Structures are given as C-alpha cells and as structure tokens.
Amino acid sequence: MDDPLFGIGKLDSDLNGLPPKKIALFSASPSVGNEVFGYQMIHENLVKGKKVLLYLNRTSPQSYKTEMKEYNLPDNGNLVIIDSYSGITGIQPEQSKNIISVSNPYDRTEVKDKIETELKKGYDLFLLDSVSLLADFFDFEYAVSVVDVIKAAASSHNISAALLLTDWGYTSQQLDMISSRVNVQIDIKGIEKRVIFGQYFAIIKCDWIVGRKFSSALFKSVKPGGIKIYFPKILVTGPTDAGKTSFIHTACKDAVSVDRIGGTIALDHGNLDFEGYKADLFGTPGQERFDPLLKLLGGESIGVILIVDSSRPEQFPRAIEMLRKTETYGLPVVVVANKADLPGAISSDEIREKLHLDMSTPLVQTVAEDKTKIDPQNPTKLKIDGVRKALESLFDILI
Amino acid sequence: MSPMIPTGFKSFDEKTGGLEPKKSYLLIGSKESGKEEFSYKLLESAASNNFSSVYVTTAKSATDLVNDFLARKINVSKFLGDKIIILDDFSRNVSPQAVGNPYTKILNGPVDLTGLSVTLSGVDNDFIKEGNMVVNILDSISVLLLYNNPVTLFRFLQFISGRAKISGITMFFLLDDKIHPQDVNETIKSICDGVISLKLENGKRYFTLTGVAKEVLEWTELQ
Image 1 (cartoon, rainbow over the protein chains, first blue to last red):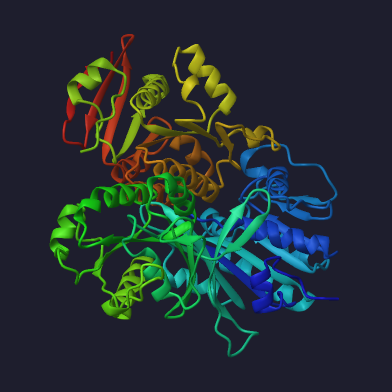
Image 2 (image 1 turned 60 degrees about the vertical axis):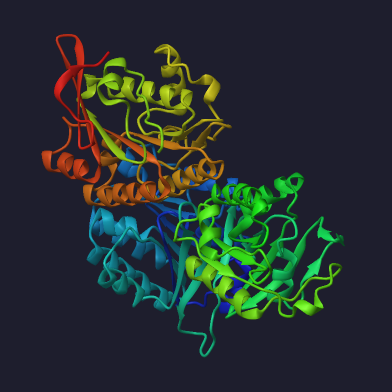
C-alpha cells in the first residue's frame, strides 16, 4: 500500500508523500495558521482508505469536522479523534466509537497514556493539533516528551506522523527541541507589511530526499477547496505611454501584449525569472476606465512597479492617483522614472517631491537601450541595468 | 493626521477630544462598571464616523450580542456586514455546528488563539485594502484567560497588538479586574498604550484615562 500523502500536490511531488516512521512538523506564524494543512492531509488519507488518528486540543471534534466540511475536505466517518478539548471547556464530548475522550486534559499522564495506547492499535497516519497548545498548557519540555512518545510509537508501528505548531515567539532553543526530533519541517509564513499580502510554505529540511533544493510556494486557503498554490503576480502600472509595456518586455523574455494598438488597451504579461525568483508581471492600461482592473489585479499581487514618464510631469497627478490606489491595498511599491534622458526630464528628487514619495519608497531611473530604434508600434527595449535595479528593489522589500 | 475616535460619551469626548487612533487601549473595570455599554457605544460611534470595526465576542453568541445592541438602543444594524463584522468565539462551544452569516464569522472557541489571530488578520486586511480606518474590540480578555494560561495569552496579545501597530489599527481589550490576580492585570496593562478605567459608584459611572496624551486622572462622571 502507498505511503500517506500530504494531500497538497507540491509537497507530495517534492517529498513523495510522508513515509512510515517519519514525522513532519508544520510550523506556522500566528497570522497565517496551519490548520488547513491538517484538514487536507486527513481528508486525502481517509479517502485513500488509510487509518487516521487525530489528537485534538485546539477545538471540539464536532467543530473540527464542521471546519473540514466548510473547506470541502470532509471526514468520511472513519477519522478517530482523541478529544482533549471538551474537558477544558466543560462541553459534552461527542459520544461516538471514533471519539476517545481525555477526561482530564490537564493531567499530563492521562494525555500521554491516551496517545501511546491508541497509537499501539495501529494507524497509518497520526496528526497532533496542536503541539504549541500542549507546550502552553503544560510546558515545552512536556510537549517534547510527547513528541518522543509519538516518535517511538511511529517507529515501532510504522506510523507516519504530523505535528502542527504555531510559533507564538518561542525561543530558538525551544523550537530546536521539536525541530531536531522531526524528519521534515515545513514552515508556513505570511509576507507581511501593513497587510498580509501573501502567504507561503517552504520545506526547511527533509531527511529522506537528499541533494535536492526545494522552492517555496505561495498559497491561499480557500473555502471550499483548501490549500491552493498560486504563482505570484507583480503589477506594473502607471499613466499612459509611461513605458509599462517596455518595462515588461525588457524584464521578461516571453512578454506578450494582448490587443496592443499603440497604447496598451488590454494587458501586458510576462513570465519573470529573476535571480531564482519566478513571478508573473501584469501590465495594466493607464486609462482611468481600466481602474477596476487595477483593483482586481492589485488584490492578487504581491508588489507594484509604478512607471512614470520623467519628461511628462503633467501626468503625475494621475500617477499619484494610481499610487494611492495601490497603496491602499498595502502593497510594496517601487517607482520607475522612465525616459530619464529625454529633453524636459526632471530629476529624481523633483519626481519624489511631486509624487509625495517618502524615502522608504524606492525610485529607480530607466532609459531606452537605443533611442534611435524607438518604434511607436513596438515595445522599446530599456537598458537592463535600470530594470534590474527596480526588480532588485522590489524583491528587497518583499523578502 | 488621522481623526480621533469619538466614544459616544459626551463627557469623555469633551475632556479627551476622543481617542487617539492606531493605539491599543485596555478597558478595565468590574462587572457592573459599564465596560459593555462603553464598548457598544464606541462601536456605534466609530461606525457612524466612518471607521470599520471588528467586534470579537467571547462570552455570548453573535445573535445575543445583536439582541443586546437592540435592547440598549445601540443603533448599529445598518452597519452590520459593511462597517462592522462580528467574530463569534462563543457559539461553537455550545453548538459545534454553528455557521456564520454575512456579518458574523464563527471561530473555534477560546482555546484556538491561532484561529482568532488568523481570522482577525483576514478581516482587518479586507478593511484596510478598502482604505478604511479600523477598530478592533476584543470582548473580553477575561474569558480568554479562563481557558488559556496567562503567559500564552500575553504572547497572543503582544502579537496582535504588534500587528495592529504596523497596520494602523486601534485595539480595545476588555478586562474584568476583579477576577484575575493583580500581576495578570498589570501585565496586560503594560501591553496597552492607554488604560480606560471604569467604576460604578452611588448609581453613577465614572472613568479615568491614562497612558495617552490627554489623560484624565480624576474620576469623572461618564455621561
């Protein structure tokens, strides 16, 4: 029979599932959460006919199953749960052959015994939600001792195990105590500035796949649907004819402009492969009537390149409006002052002043690669140095 | 400069000019001191002044909360779902299959602080993306303290206060000062910028405000 799976395509293709005797740690930042990884893993393995055991101290079994259903990752009736929550809140535990109640969740011995006894019955997958609550209820050393019990049982009974941990600011020594006991660690974090504009997971270590580098993946938790991986988008925007199309065509080898007649009237798109990072660049038309597109793409993007024409300061109010629209989404912005070598171009200090930019917003000047080859019907190649500098500035903010 | 947040209490707003936004406040007092009344009026006043609010209820369901608004003539019905979202951290303890509605998100219960943190961040993010100023009211810390160890809760409060600062959100935490040890109360005070103390005496309610620019150090009647 096949090994248990994570139920998330990227993890399963990178790691080939979670082999028996191996323990996975999902370590999440408090603003992102890891519970959906648990729902997805449980659902996937139940559907495949695996025996799954869940130790639950975060919420009640009924509430947990309601959440699974809301994500369209339902329990098929075979999930066995050690209920260590109902006893905390005093609510009536669910009476079912698949629910094992911990009568006193504050009793260290009972908690450990219940886990150990149940694991001996033989399961394909064990999930602990959550190890951080165990540490908070008792202490970190106790949580580590429970992990040791799980490790021993997993080894003796060929069980795959996963631990969910929320990092509420534990010390690195405490986290190392858990991390050193697991075989694979997956960190789940948010890309946070004023708002959380993206969340990603990354395989930090794995002891059964040797010599392979793992890439991180941006994801969304979708109700219904669960964890969905997506490709990051970078929005390239700015007033008409500022040079958005030129920027994208210079930055991306395979850029295309959809329905291009002179100024962009639909979308520019390019696949960016820059210093090991991949992203989709989307260029929006500069005309106001396309502002709903700005909002739509802004909501999906992780950063913004705002392009202005240095020689046309009369367009700056429009640029400010566009900047304001993107900033309200809390996205990081890099301003590109294009056509910096044209007659009438103003200095970057003047541009910064006219756009009301503070010093934390990077401003990069760009110019055409060869002014003698400018063709209004085709995108102009920009000098690569400026484009690279703009992209570096944006990735510096993001990472 | 961001506008001050009027509380809806004339005497308070006259003395203080309203509450400074982007700060965290502890609303502390005994059960009968009027914390709920204060937080309800604040919610109404914030919504009327174009702030978006998230109200976290831990001791009663969203349905009971809305009924309470009606009973106390707190006029927020028109703002529900638009300017006000309720996070119900109570219902699933009594009804595990409880589901939300356009203005209510159901949480998993008081032990799941991660769930609360993630949902609160999500709703706040949506408001901020719309360009709105945001107020969070957590009613109450006392209930969370009944189920969680204080150190865990301090870490949680520190985390969400830190995030609120970065995001420019104004936080209000309600705490019953008579049911927790003094050191717990003091630690929670130290996490907050301002402390609004309330008391009931001879049938009248009084307040003080400390820790912000316009302090009110003498007990002043709340009207």
